[in-house]
Image 1 (cartoon, rainbow, N blue to C red):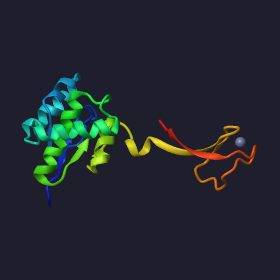
Image 2 (tube, rainbow, N blue to C red; image 1 turned 90 degrees about the horizontal axis):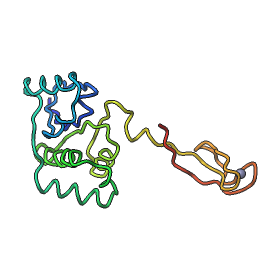
Image 3 (cartoon, rainbow, N blue to C red; image 1 turned 135 degrees about the vertical axis):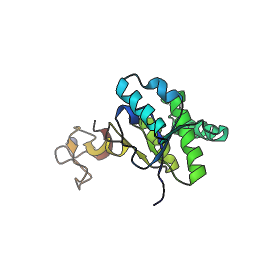
Image 4 (cartoon, protein in one colour; image 1 turned 45 degrees about the vertical axis):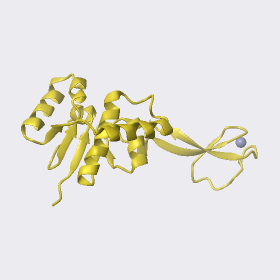
Length: 168
Ligand SMILES: [Zn+2]
């Protein structure tokens, strides 16, 4: 069986994720974000068990993070810890050819999607589930389901357009 490699942000520890057989990585700054006893205890236990390693991302991977988030618009929503975790994901992927990131942060997930790096949420449903589409009438603002087949409103005859809604 091939080994799994994961990069963890604070939500993995707070949400008490299960390490199973994976080798896990995080950056030292994440330990400062863990305020409660349970999440700190989980981090300590994983380190003692040899299942969690603290690492710094490669410099070139941090630069890759900066250039990606400048064009995706996520640069203002990411903390320096988030950026280091994203950089570390690139570093680990380079080393082993694969990695999965455990994070509840939507901006981090957005960057990971751009890079096609898989991720998993612990506490929240994840970015794929936070948006739904609806159709809206331009005239009377009536809402239709996404599957509504007509291009015009059945009340006022105005055009219908598609809109993305946050479902949480
Ligand atoms: Zn209408």
